[in-house]
Length: 417
Image 1 (cartoon, helix red, strand yellow):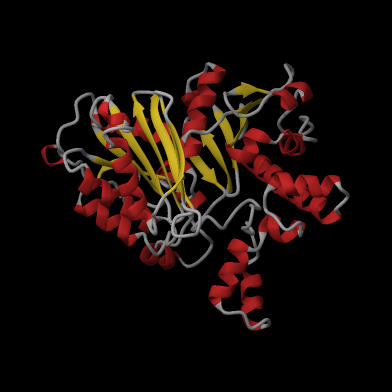
Image 2 (cartoon, one colour):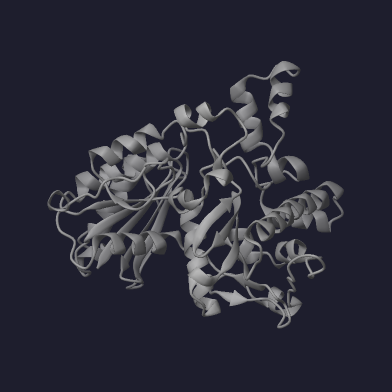
């Protein structure tokens, strides 16, 4: 079954064409709507492109991708089997969309209803779906939600300590994000450990520019660090993470800052960028600055890793044990230093025994799942490259079954709460 996966954002659109588990083609259009918009593309035949393109918004970018795949000279679809479905990453499904669904009007409405919860993500996600519906009208469009993996959290984990009516009427609760990634690497970790997911207690650390950590028990998310929005939780590249809410009141009441300015400060000018004062939120630059003697950069890295370590301890206690600690995403897969700093001191005295093998930690990196713990470590430590596109493709295939028909002929099962 050939599945086209679209990950449509406001500034970039990633795309991958799968034949079962094999990648036929993949690429990205980046810097959408800005100077230097570029298309990067490669396919299984060896054809590659790196060129300027015209795309002022998400819709134009997805249309450009569709035309490329069907191009009479360079399009992979001229030699591959026809696309049977398109799978789309959608960031927020709220409490209604908690599993993959075939897109219909009800699904589109629910995605729109979540615009205010994910204003930077859900609108371009829906635009990508709408363009594919027009360009590929005879195939089902499948939406896969970043929040869905966390829908298994118990109410005591997702509720905030505020009046219950704010949850009941306004939906203010912890939703969690990066769920497609957390779900994928949890399954890959179980495969690497050669144990059924239902038997494992895992902590998955998605560490990139955006960072989150999830407690996965029996293959299900039972708690996660991101909350009502992706701002909560770990210190991130530019986001502040956990913060006393009174800080916001202080900035408004005593510093005269308007809400939009506070939002910009906490989302775009905080985190590692704000703490390290190294002129960059790229961890490679911050690590280099620390190596040159910057005390602020060194403290920023320590604060980043300390926050992760605190969550590991909390989730170990919440699950009453831990079998595996999984690092993924750009930093988690590529930074031996960050992995070493996170695990340092977790040697089993009163908690989990997490013992890195220094040689394996330095040698192993992105590209394939691997173990980096010492033999005597009671907790297995793994580096598992994430692949959200592959997970979306898998979920689409599982939903559709072996022979998907036209979406109007397929029965849409009722949405969950």
